[in-house]
Image 1: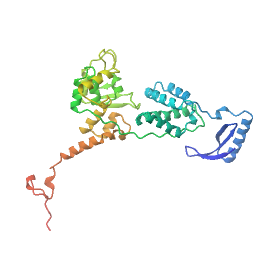
Image 2: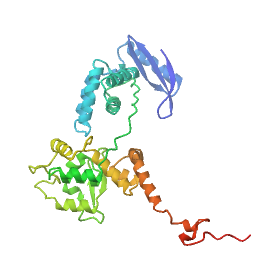
Image 3: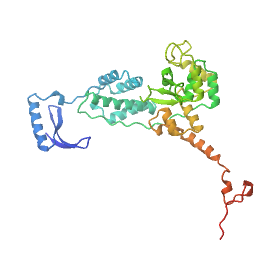
Image 4: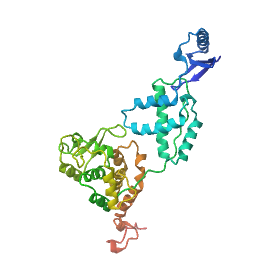
Amino acid sequence: MSVYLETRKDGTKAWFYDFSYKGMRFRKLAGATKSDAIRAQEKARSQVLNDEYQLTNQKKDPRFELFADTYLRNRRNMRSYTRDELSIKHLKAFFKGRTLGSITGNDVRQYINSRLEERSANASINRELACLKHLYTCAFDWEEAKSIQRPKIKLLQEPPGRTRYLSEEEAASLLLHSPEYLQPIILTALYTGMRKSEITSLTWRQIHIDDAINPFIELIKTKNNKSRFVPVNDDMVHLLATLKKGDDDFVFHGKQGLPIRYFKEPWQKALKDAGINDFKFHDLRHSFASHFLMKGGDLLSLKEILGHSSLKMVERYTHLASAHKQRQVNRLNGTFRICQPNASEEYGGSGLSKKAN
């Protein structure tokens, strides 16, 4: 038997009792003083010996695969469900038969090593580790786990994100080789930096070009579940004005006139016909960001347009902004040469006047 003083997460201190009986552990907050804790412990021990101790005080430690199924069922309507489902598939294969409380930080390291041996990318493994961390959080929040330790989970280093983007010539070639119904979708990605899912789910109710001084697109269902407003330029306004409205409220439709969702085959064919290699649809978002900065945009505005939570997410484009700044500074060449002490007469003066001795 033992009682001890512990500092809780909120900074306050309290006494706990902690003892075991027939292989079962009994631990609970017992009071503000040591005397309170001793009395509470004696009472609990008496209840245990007489089979009167409440079961809610006992350890609750579900098997990993059983709680993983519960976790997925409760997240079925979440936007990340497909990614979670894939992560859980890998996690269950490794941790099946274990309880949540039995998994240690070393076990997590072994899981990482096994995924690395399968040549999985660090980014993919990190998505699985993030899912594992959230799974433990939910287990405690939903009171499915109690009196267990969660393992230490440290994410892997990831390489810098892709910055593959189209040149103006490549963009023109891609549009030329794309089917007519796909061209507006590609242009929207190039002009706004919107994600594929944001574009295919776009409705006319989200378009504000007639009743707004500064036209914009209102995005509600975003990756981070935060609404944002995407400004649109004159070319984008003209593009939207030329689109025909269907019987539904969706902006973009396929060749059959139905709301478009998937276009992998025509997209891949357009890339091949245009001679563009190593390019994904998401790279159109990078193309917008790159050209936005190269034409004078700033990182803070780019962050807000793309919907990132921090400037760190747009730091990958910093070199493009720096190149633009250098060109802008170079435009000042010769502007103030007349003010230099040794400026020659060919620049319209003999330099700064010197004070007499």
